[in-house]
Length: 259
Ligand SMILES: Nc1ncnc2c1ncn2[C@@H]1O[C@H](COP(=O)(O)OP(=O)(O)OP(=O)(O)O)[C@@H](O)[C@H]1O
Ligand SMILES: [Mg+2]
Image (cartoon, rainbow, N blue to C red; front, side):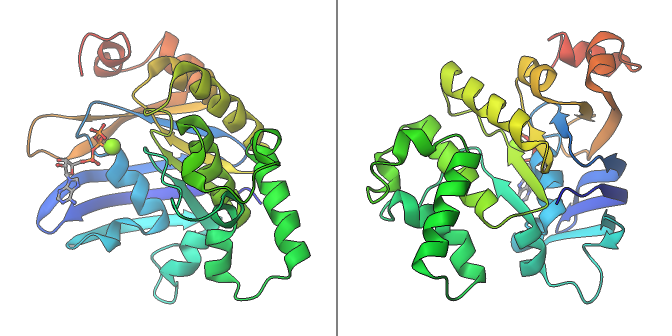
């Protein structure tokens, strides 16, 4: 079930260092939102606050609110483990468990949350998740081979299958294609477009064409200089952002004059 996210006045710290300052924005369900901006402006840091992964880093803390369908992720009685079951994440480098089989990789996250699963339910979940990640046809005859036996692009789709197997509401992706060739990149982009019917998707990308191709809404973050916090400069529907941005900094960044 796709959900909306409302972030209100979020400050994100590493100990005393304010890495991202005063961000307020809304992320629509059943849509793809792209975060763009120069290296070090806090895109990954901000993304990790949306499933409480930031606080896993020593000194990592936030101020402000992240509401998912109106419920504050940082509310007193909210369990971060439950949050991560509802907000899945795919990382820059495909990270399947290398010694686990393809099928066991798909089930890995699900098994963490559900102690017992019958063999036939497990088989169904493996198939539906791999189909959802557009990988089924390529691996259906070798489900017991190790995850590490796949190509990079296939490994990334396996990680997406693992993420969707837990049936999250939101999928966060931090540069999911940066380690992939152009063909695998297009496969992932097609998959993202398919998945947005079901999930709220947030993607960080350095690739402007990718942001333009896959996202409905784009948010541009920037940083005034080393040691300064990253800030949200503007956010709008992607077509507007790439044709007529309001801010000069956005225009400079997307036209490659900077960053
Ligand atoms: N674990 C950490 N401890 C302390 N500071 C960190 C940590 N991780 C990131 N930072 C700092 O937070 C700021 C934002 O980093 P972040 O990785 O979020 O940027 P980014 O926009 O994702 O950059 P890139 O495009 O290079 O991935 C940077 O100044 C970075 O050095
Ligand atoms: Mg990053």
